[in-house]
Amino acid sequence: MKLKFKFALASTVLAFGLGAQAAPILIKYSHVVADVTPKGQAALKFKELVEKRMAGKVEVQVFPNSQLFGDGKEMDALLLGDVQIIAPSLAKFGKYAKQLQIFDLPFLFDDIHAVDRFQASPEGQGLLKSMTKKGIMGFGYLHNGMKQLSSNTPLSMPSDAKGLKFRIQASDVLEAQFKAVGGNPQKLAFAEVYQSLQTGVVDGTENPWSNIYSKKFHEVQKFIMDSNHGVLDYMVIGNAKWWAGLPPDIQKGLSEAMAESIKFGNQVAFDEDAAFRAKVIADKTSTVMPLTQANRAAWRTAMQPVWKKFEGEIGKDLIAAALKANQ
Ligand code: LMR
Image 1 (cartoon, rainbow, N blue to C red):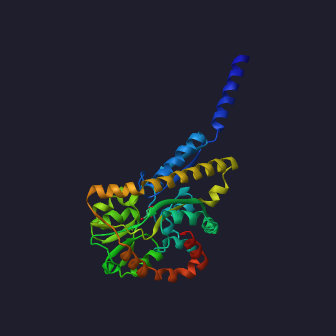
Image 2: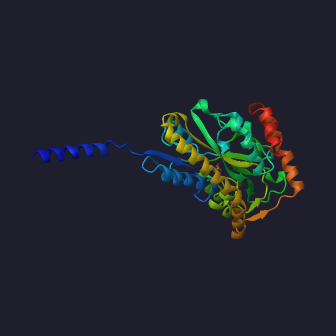
Image 3: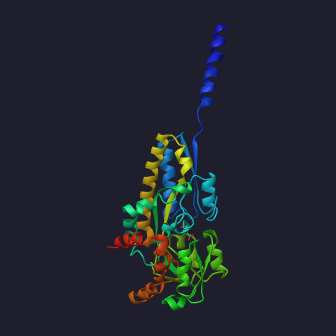
């Protein structure tokens, strides 16, 4: 009897102990692109690292392809706590921090390496904190690549864009950029781009090679210019209040995994941009056209007035710091 009682007590203690064990912290990481892209790869790397190192403590669910939230909804979802990590394009933050519009200025950066240098500079790092007051914390920058202009008619000179409808991300700078060449820009969510191109809602668009290939934009665009006229990169962000409520050891582990996953994604961006371009060419559904130095200069001249228009909101010094990164 006595023994039986002891056994019952021990099992109760054991059951209680097990029951009391906290459930793992669930992190939802949502984005709008395909798994094969730099952002898709970075998100999966983050999940892999966290679940290996913090098994039982943290679980990460990755939702690609606008499965959980498309753009337009994902920022609200982050602020409401429906998702913990997202990585919107830098073009989508204008509403939250005007300075971040710098990344959309056409022909500001010579190439992705200049973008990388600017992001690593004190000015670039400072911008990661530009949305703190809005409850958004920046973990770091993540590359995708330089954008290419596409359309159903060749875009050799700026005058070729006249009257054409272009899909743009939700950015006032990009709106001004296409207006500067006589185009009609339309802000559309990423998930709507393919269909809008296919049905002729818009005639053209701009995106880096990994997005063009993985979303098959080259199947519904006849010409893609090797324009490299601007950058499409990301800021990986989290809800600041959620982050502040995490135990310090979890924060440390997550910060390390995040830094490594970003490094990994950036390497994918550097290494695979040319390969995605080659795949687009190999599919033969679209003609990839070089932009001569002279024509590129004409595009630059036509679009550059946009810098002046946004200089007040962005800041002259910040633009100067970005230009320094080209050297
Ligand atoms: C776009 O809307 O074109 C991009 O921002 C999508 C993305 O996340 O790369």
